[in-house]
Image 1 (spheres, helix red, strand yellow):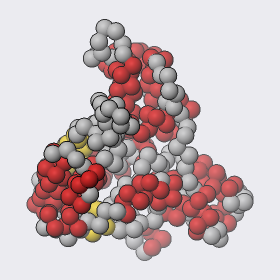
Image 2 (tube, helix red, strand yellow; image 1 turned 90 degrees about the horizontal axis):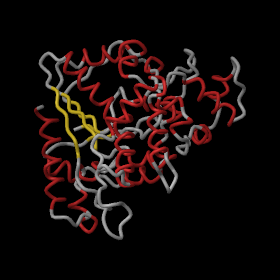
Image 3 (tube, one colour; image 1 turned 120 degrees about the vertical axis):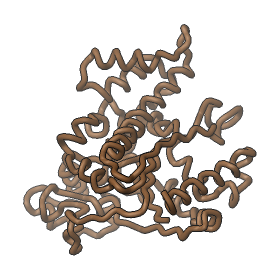
Length: 342
């Protein structure tokens, strides 16, 4: 079973997980794979792959294209996908995986390391110390959705059929491969706190966030979206309802919409391959009275990973609910059985 962690909420050109997200890096480092291997009766293989500036920095030119397998003797037109595929909280269509203009970020990096931004930029960047280059490519997660055109202006139909026809080819190539993709029910929680950092939030914050996601769609689309999200509210709007809806919006736009689009593409192109979807909705272990999260808090981004790697067995003091060992057993069984037989 091959495990490859995905970079968190960054463009491919900005993916520096081990340096810009030390907590996540330390978390992944603690997962040896032993429980997954022993309980799932599989061999667990992972890999260290080039991320951030070292793997994806691109000037948009052949000299520094970013992620270019041709430079290593490979053929980008001859890629074989085999076995079965599982995507957890992120797919190739996710808006944070796509950089429409990678050169903009390359220019930012070049300026930080005192390289010129003219035709000499690529050559200069290649001479920079790798550690310095990687640190220069770290990404600031403090910007608000309303201020960022790069993250949030994403249209499923446009990305799939116009800007990225290769996505359709990808799923055509995977027509004989079984595919599972899914999300955690509150994948967007972390990013809500970044995009709406205010303590005293209100309806205006919700409308502002939603407008930032769909500002190119017009006011009619905004009003329709607002009606959809507040359709389950009580007559008197509570602060809890607003907070939960903010998380729902972030989850839908950053994770769920693209995941559903990927599932549809796979199903539409599938020949013998079968298409499956999942949703994790376990109550958060850090939620409740005198705990960091409110009682309504569910699974946020990365919360499923410890269960896949058997943490309730290796660190039971952190997983006190009776359901935790069962959940990790089920998850290991589902994932390894799927990897083994589809």
